[in-house]
Length: 493
Image (cartoon, rainbow, N blue to C red; front, side, top):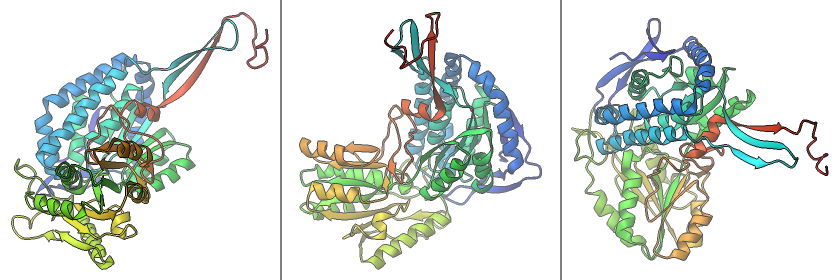
């Protein structure tokens, strides 16, 4: 299959463009080829988006929402088909792939509902015979840059609120998982979205991404990816006075107190740490455990990890699929070696799987380090793989301090049956998301998603808060007094 850019409602030939293979990480089978677009394709896409934006913005918001309802319906019809493709190109197990497609369905219906809200505010004026209100206004052309680990979910978090708010967009998906973007483009086309409203340009971040950020007609950039790349985007976007929304890395922790339900905690830790082979920005990579239950928790973890099946995610009995590529394997292996050199104790795992049936894919064992000190590299840096560090603490206060000591602030979790500890933790944990008696993953689409510190820059994906990224507030004053009234001056009259 040869994937093509979708620009101005048309599929564009790849003639003259370099293409690269799209590979199944489970077995290295080539699935498709994807073009590496140039500045020219980005310029064409932005021009089409700009041309379509005014008409789209003038379309009543409930009518724009109707397109999202239709897109959601088509996602629902194709759920299993899309999930199968998602597993093939990204590697996550089929159960998770189905869940991700469902997230896109949910987001379509939720944001479609905003078409009949998009609430502003009315307020009293300080002057007689004067009306005051604020409304949301679309910004224009939006640039979307999305990662490979959630190729449908994150794309819908960004594109659907942009659309319902009256913006058009140019989307640069990750080159590792372009097939999902290709399928989404077909759904946009089938749903009858007007030409130029949704545009998809494949290619490298250094070319397509940079051109989107620098293009003067792109007013908003929404990016999900590494903190290092996001920082560069913020700097570059700032030079052009763009609104930049960043959702970046995490070093998320599960806190297990001495009164916790340990079986529940183990289930939450394993799902959070090893689901998607640890390749989630919300993945649990630290367990901060009270010293009184540390030994027992470790024994239970090792026992449950031994039951995990590894392999091709299309097999419904498999619990852990491959990581995305060889470069990720090398990075994960490097961090494991660093952990051992720092003096952490390898409790389980720690190796790349190279024997059949794993030799054609990119597989890494579920890995747990214990006796980890908080200042170790493996306790501070994002690994983005199935590697977990266990850190011992003596109190809730110490646990919160350890949790907050990293540069990231996306997700955190506490397992406890003490309501006082729970309320202190949810107040003092400095992350954008806090879970109680659950793991660090499982965000729902109607609440804001994002983090603090090195995880983001104050904006949020998902929920009603996402509309703030794609709209500007406009304040409107209507004076029907028939005379000039000056605010703050004529208030005594």
